[in-house]
Length: 366
Image (cartoon, rainbow, N blue to C red; front, side, top):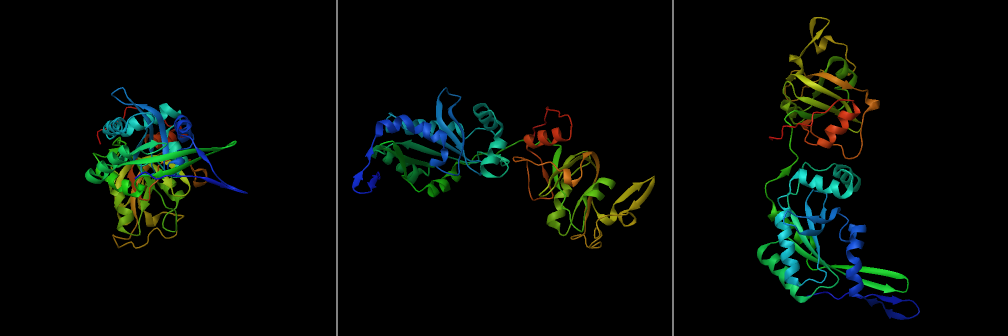
């Protein structure tokens, strides 16, 4: 049943602070837009009054750190049946929003890229999948019995990820307060939201670009990689196997972890155990043992195909020393040695840093 919330001022005397539902309804949406953390600190507001394809407008749309969406609908003066039915209709539209559509909505509403705002909010790069699931929140200044029955019916009997959050607005002199209560534990609703998963909405890959993490240590040195044209990984199959994705002609965006992006290049020879790799030096074929390397231990575990260094030869297009690496919030980062670069935001930013023209005609077939 609805929870009654009250506030008492306790100084020299005990005095109950008055509650105003009318003033609350007028101010509630503006308050939430100004600071969505009043609902949850784990939400980033995408925008308010989001137009659907059916000509209706969602009061607010938000995103959590996993890229999942929340439809936030204010009850205002509508009947319980109207507001719940409307929210369900919005959810049927939201569940089909693509990665690119979400980026576009955010930028149109906020005039900044979602990648940057997401990184500022969550201290992490925007996930490759967005809108894997969603949930619905009905917001009101007080919860009536009919709304409560409808939400409990949908949640308990049909696992619909719907909840009600209700706020009380209080005023005492020049001071204003709001309180928040949930009908259902938000953790329970979040668990139910996994049932709304549909086909994953990933940012599409252009069938060309990869990120390679070049981890500097005794086994590899960035100066060697620049001079001889390669990237490498080793010390276990987990580290080296992702290099096998790199095909001849693929473009690599090379990154030194904890430093940033240091180069863009093109793969000219696929991954091989280090002992099988040959370099042409002044017209003469040489293996790495014959080269002057800065890394003192690149030939570690030479006869162990699981642990030895695996090398991909690369022709560098542009590169910088480690000390000049490029990094800013929102750029793509991942712990794998090599992975598909789906983030157009990262591609554009890093390419601009290196002064490389971008072809915007992307192959989005995967």
